[in-house]
Image (cartoon, rainbow, N blue to C red; front, side):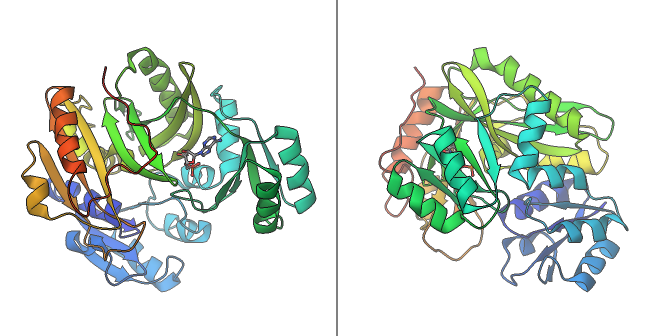
Length: 375
Ligand code: AMP
């Protein structure tokens, strides 16, 4: 099947790599001629809202998907007039707007931090007072990797938040003093079949995911609740394709943070660590193929390579390590690749991650982040 993808970054690239063996061919739309997905298919170089390029993408595709949720609504609508867009424009509309997302969480009985949506400096000030400090101010749309948000811990930071965000629609959330962060990825097919991956434990630093452990250690008791939340969301949205839910764990309860209508960085481990990867299952779902098993193969740790790259030789000398490079120019804070270490026993994986941590140039485990062991 001919698949169109809006966005040509690493997620598009890995979708392509997973779909090619299934007989799919890919066309990507991306503003950069250097987009990493060009290795997996044809690349249309144009802004996401460029009308003739969107028409070209639609004409070249039997189904169109996207690798990020900040697709302009008009662009999705223009394509959806001509060819199926999956996940549907409804999933896109909900997940690109934090307020809509909260409504869906509440409707589905999923707990989420207390929040207020405001549009003026005065209301922002009142909302911060009402929710109390610490709280988090986030733009309603277009935030990712910690961009477009600020944690307010003092009067000075409140002033700074009002200066930065006072004149635009924002959401203010109470700060969750979480024990750890978890995520779950689910995939729903055209026929309503579901495939849900095990819970994953994530470590973020400066808003950017650094390390994922899968299946999440000590999470057996939370599994059922996470699966029920994912099922509820997939069915509420009539979603087709992958959906990721990011959560906080506090006192053994799950609190939803946000969701993404797509494959996700916290699911990269599935390439080696699960029977069927998130990328393959997303492609299977949107092309009408049966979904594959999400059963984990032993234990995996995924480590993002951010800002600088270690030597491939050094990474691959570590037993159980698999290297994925995204063909992106190094820049501080930029995700350039990832390494997944997979092994049958959790201790083996952690020993390999310790070796990776020592590699020159690899910024694997940032200072100040808590490392959770498996005990
Ligand atoms: P987000 O863009 O909403 O995924 O936020 C990025 C990261 O900021 C999360 O992974 C958390 O580490 C942190 N964060 C976001 N919202 C909150 C919150 N309400 N309480 C505590 N930490 C938060």
